[in-house]
Length: 379
Ligand SMILES: Cc1cc2nc3c(=O)[nH]c(=O)nc-3n(C[C@H](O)[C@H](O)[C@H](O)COP(=O)(O)OP(=O)(O)OC[C@H]3O[C@@H](n4cnc5c(N)ncnc54)[C@H](O)[C@@H]3O)c2cc1C
Image (tube, rainbow, N blue to C red):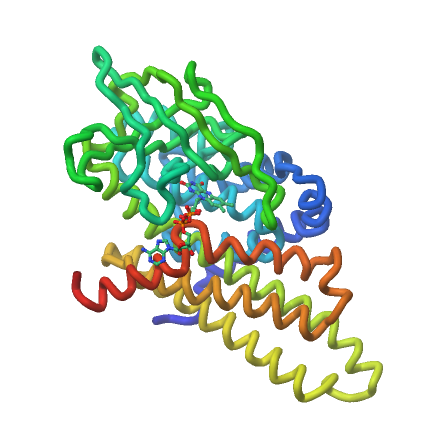
């Protein structure tokens, strides 16, 4: 694998870093106010970050997976909530429409999504189906030429502000759990579709997370995404990409915790007139840096495989598993080294709270281990 960024990748990184620098100063305040980053999302759209993988012919940037990782990591380093909103929009909403949508569906949705006029969300999880996603109960039954959708979804990122929802529902109750599920594109203004109150979360507090309620929502035939009863496969394949996106979030968090630690300890060392505050601190920072680099390389490897069209389910899981553990470890180490100051109301405290969810959403760490083990067994 080529470790050095090529000129195009370096330019993408520099541009994303410049955008992230504008997001960083307000991140704490938005977090405290639970404020959705509307203006930043508009600016992100202007820079092309709402259509990272959308072809240029449809108004997007047409980036590959590795290029998207480079952009997303920079954004995560500054603001985790902004990152998850963009990651879900790009990989979990634009992604499946791009991969399985008809030309008409792509024309209907993707230019508006790339322009940031429509934000995307992905609705798989339900009150009784999280890790066991195939246990979902939401159902779509045929009604005339279209469908009638009923059910409840839980923990849906960008659920309030999104206008484009990729929703998974059971379409064949007689089929085996994973077999009778289909994917639909549901408009945010569909009659019978309502949202719950925002969840009160430990971290990523300026991202939206809500319940969705579908009561006799009538969908046209054209809302079906891909083939009927193939939706579970689409949901899982979409998560391969989504997990790489969340892994970039974890790498950004791990790097941010390291940056904050180095920035805080450097002046302490200088004041003491020595090169380091203590060998203990230096060794911990060295481990933090090594962990971050290792996580980044796992993420880039999974992305490279994705770009080459090579199946990458275990590699995406390894990247997410390792990077999310690295992020949490780095945040805990930062607090351990910096003490009470870092524990209370500063950037490190926010990073620590934000990092926890990277081990939960888009598959918990246990689910990642199950997927990796399944690949080892050849199952
Ligand atoms: C902030 C946030 C945003 C989210 N955004 C979205 C979204 O946009 N769209 C969406 O569809 N979902 C979303 N989710 C849901 C998320 O994907 C689920 O929370 C996740 O899949 C875990 O499901 P659960 O919370 O029901 O936990 P459970 O599945 O109930 O798991 C509880 C615990 O049991 C463990 N466990 C479960 N099954 C097994 C097993 N077979 N073997 C070993 N251990 C097991 C889990 O690892 C976990 O530790 C979001 C969640 C959060 C917190």
